[in-house]
Length: 265
Image 1 (spheres, rainbow, N blue to C red):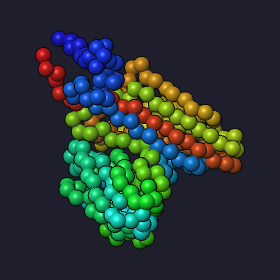
Image 2 (cartoon, rainbow, N blue to C red):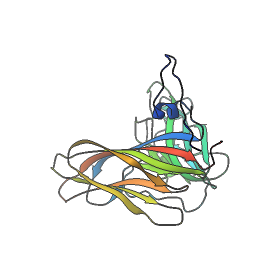
Image 3 (spheres, rainbow, N blue to C red):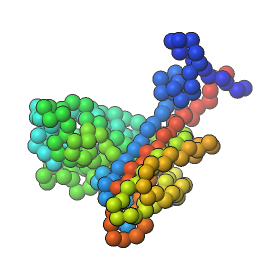
């Protein structure tokens, strides 16, 4: 039996499906907007994230810590004070935690161990209004200068938010990519090769879409959304088409998550 889902706005008119999802009015549906940025992409393939280089995933669930390269990012400092970290636990279930920063000393992300980090957001800050140093999530409690060897999420100075174009579909959900946005700019006249890649659980990364961009902003809509099963890792990667300069790139995905359960009759 088909189910027609609708809602009525305050002025008495039907609202678009997308708005209903954003307003949490449609059961078992969630919207995700994921985006990344890299200011200097060369010919070496890189994940689009502020850290640069191909993103390295945790191979097993681990205890994670968040630290800063600046001593001003503390609970009473002038920089970032509290942050919220969201990701997945060892079962690939969603988890969220808010902690106070302690400068260059790692602060443990409590609770069960983590297997994926999807986002960091700065919630409160001192007089500086933003993170004074680069924020890192890693596996070290006392990283040298606040910079861990292995980095699983970073927040650039002053960004107050991760800019990492990686996302993992939580357990119990199927993800549908409905739209992709990409942009590229190069003073050296270079093109950016941008690839949407995905790795199903237990599999390898496959290219799902690839575009070439030299300047400006492009939006690609998928009339038939791209489907990804639970626990799938998704990235957008980039590289310059030739040597002799770099390309600034950004990319974003709109993802509809639908819970894997039957709808009520």
